[in-house]
Image (cartoon, rainbow over all chains, first blue to last red; front, side):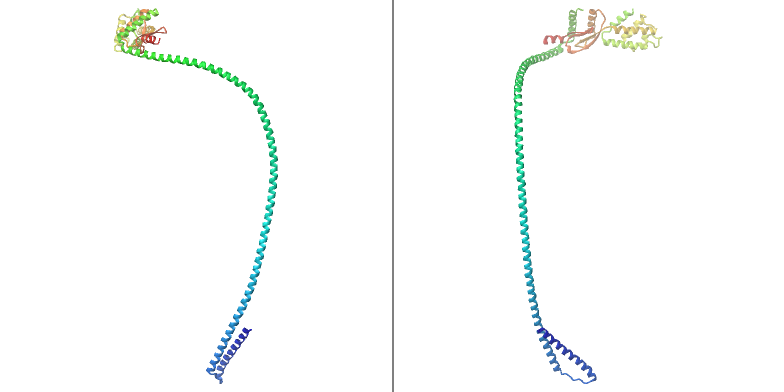
Length: 244
Length: 155
């Protein structure tokens, strides 16, 4: 309200000033043709001073009004802002609560699913275990039966085989002993023969060496005439023996 | 007559080597039989054969056993070769290199005892030490000293 007042005062002053200036101009123009009332310098200065003072005062008032309005507006805005902030906070809280509720529900559902899964798993495991146990029992029974049967057969066969083996073994042992004895005898004879053969061989080698030495010695000692004599003697002997 | 000549001629042949040499000389003579028939054979072969064989041919010419008839001469030498090749050979082994006189003695012994002319096929083998080894009629007779020693030592 004050601002409107100040603003209207200011407008009035401006209007006075404009009228004055127009008047002054018209007066100047009139003065060209007519006589005009002159305003003293002091009056003009006083008027201008009054106007400036009035303008300043009005401006100050205007400034105060504006500041007041500004504060008012600021306060209003602040209030709106606070309200908005409060509302936002409330909405945020609401969303948070909703989110938490959702998470909680999700958690609960997950737990529920887990629980159901676990239960199903347990159930399947229990069933499997039961079936496996049953199967195992059957298998064990079949295995035990088969094993018993097999063992029984093995036992029977072993008994028969054992008897045969005993008999065979006795036979083999007897034959082995006989063979061994024969082999021993044969070896003894072989050793004896080998011994004789070796002795004979050694003797032969010895006499062969002796013979070689004798021949070598004689070969070196016999001269030509002896050779000739030996040939003729040999021929005479041949004549006697062969009766030419 | 021819037989006597051959027999006499063969007396000079003691060994297989002698026989080979002699056959070689006969071969040489035979080559000249049909050459320059106007010349005596001894003239044609002079210097081509040994002195002994040349003397033998001259002797034959002198006794008129060979003449200027080349066919007859050829026949004569062919017969001589046949006669010599028919003489039995006796392989002997002795321990030393024999002299010719000794070989004559050995040959004499065999001819006397076997009553036939033989030619010696001599092989020198010091391994037999002494004595003689001979082969006759497909049999070997060992009268070597080596054999005696072996008998004595090895039994």
